[in-house]
Length: 299
Length: 317
Image (tube, rainbow over all chains, first blue to last red; front, side, top):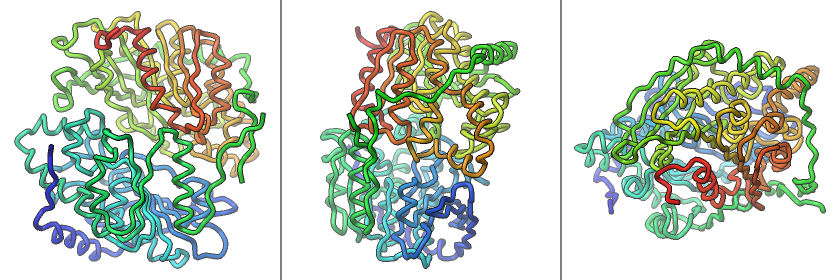
């Protein structure tokens, strides 16, 4: 079993990231995308500067009418593409989907490789690609906080480990949903799985076995286990099957470490049930109506 | 407010099969067949294991495009050849997987990146959103013309490999991968032994855009909102690419699995596809499941179905 140990300079490492982020103005550019806008909301292409400096991208969608609206940040998935926020989210929230550096629309000059991103410069905490990726997501939340149409008391974040890290770095978040964690206990997960993207770590360590300690050192800065005590939001942790990666035993240390109120949702494997339940939970927390249930069939 | 819908299995699709559908695709496939495949294969030691060798592959396709993929094959010391071939086709926004886990089961497996995907997008990159409506008013240049052919030519790649049993080649994918599974089984009906398609996308385009607000189908809604006068051209183009219209061409056994609460690929369109299949077929329809298409329960059945027809050495029988 691989234990993730909080580095002694953990606080200094992340303060340096915050300082670097503060050094660069976000310099937001918003441009309406008429093709994607509707009669109930406007969709914008958003560009922001993050650390590096690096220009990142987001889809920012604002309902028409009187605000302020609850804000919602979707942190990026692990993959090259993120969709424009869903129709139902755009009706109810000022919602931002960030593309971190390397993903499509934020892939100049750096285009992420899949597989490859997860281990990009993983042996050096100062250069590991996720240092910038976390900063990109934090910058997204800062953007939401800067918007007059967003109710700063009602901001939600949805995603994987990145959502946890963002909410920990900027405790202005009211509601947080986390699922499909990737950076949490990653070396331990790699010992139990040969599925990508986790398998990227196994590939890397097969090629560079002598770097195992350095990899462990880097990953410790990004393990949400060491970030979540700073979270003040109400957190909904999505939990998988007992005994599985992502199951209750696996997540128990994280749950125990989480600051703020914690709730658990046991995923059902029935995607429609999970979708509707998670949507209703977030809607309740942020003071909007849940999306319509998808189906009632006649006959 | 809850939407009230007829039971999905009773839905009648609006999809029409054009009289020259077969001829349209026969001409495209004939043109593709004239293009030398020029397959390339480069070993990737970093991703290989004691059991599986991983290769980056490439081949030529329509319009002079070079298509990339991953090829994962059991090491001879782990399992001796010949191996059944398995084509794994990707979803709309996902990158192709390295099908190592399939190779561990005894398949010589290709994960293909059709045009526009990373590593196949140097000369064609309409983006996401973008691909679904790229040249959607012209069937001769619509994005999926080449995209479908790229997937089919991954089968040709497998046929170049001496370690592959050419009499045992299957195809599997979900969402857009489900669509490509059906298309490949149809256009390469001479070769494909079986196919397993989950939550099939690109079925009943015109039905789907009225049944869901989810991307990627929402791209078409947005396009038509901006260009309503182009609706007849869009309708005409899509008839030639509707996966339901490929279904009657398939001769091999097919397994289809869908979620009855799928808001991305509406289950009505999955049923329409299933009804159009004239081959040996099975449908797994999971209540309360969404675009996951009940994969938790379906995947063991998919693996058993593929193993039954393709007989990989790594799967006990």
